[in-house]
Image 1 (cartoon, rainbow, N blue to C red):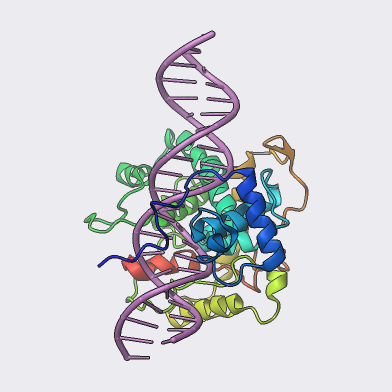
Image 2 (image 1 turned 90 degrees about the horizontal axis):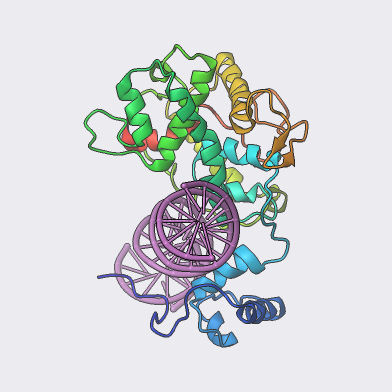
Length: 304
DNA sequence: AAGAGCCACAACCGCGTCCTT
DNA sequence: GAAGGACGCGGTTGTGGCTCT
């Protein structure tokens, strides 16, 4: 039995919002708040919209202090770093970028950053020294494992690709296949709460989350779990890998020796990347990404 | 000038999780 | 503890605008 629809599809209006609808929704919420019930909200206002649609419109567009367009190089850096670390948890990534919404970040990644990072790979593929099968797997974005019984998620694949790409830059002759950063050690399936990254604070910046951040607890729990799961703390070698990775990411994003313009903008100096040895540049819930944690979530699922 | 193709963004959809009863 | 409803999230789709031919 399927889930009951949240609204009457026949009477609900779909498609782009009109300025009048925007004004109605904005005025009502600013005056009365959401009332804690998005489903009932459109009926109260007299809008022929689904409650979910109202919520999305408010969160992504009408809410105060929303920024649109023109992501800065710093934001690029944060998005890339976090994507490689935690994958497509857009709400978490967006929480690090005040004024940005998860939808914005997601769109920006899919339309710009991903192409900027992975697109460069195509150029390099013509000089690829790796086994053709590995390259084929990469470019197809499909099954990384032998039997092809289970395909990694696109997100996981992209993360692998990014790490491979970065590793290749560091050591082109060493196939990424042997990269300990890329291939986690096999271990038993102990999928605890690793994938339950759900957060009710998705639209709250770290500063707002404060010391009692439940996300911080989530992340710490994750890291603790990873440690208990046999993932060692990063060695100094791995530390240097990550530091190199940050530089490589910059190169991928902005091109070799190009510290200047990005989409017409100006690359500001001092873009702060995460590393194990520097003070944390952005408020990351005291979260320091571990190289191995890049893969921990799906490694446990897919038992790579 | 017009049509095709591409791109970016807004919005929708379905599912997992949380909360209330 | 179970069931139902609402919320929040990530993936996907639709559409308008831009560029190319």
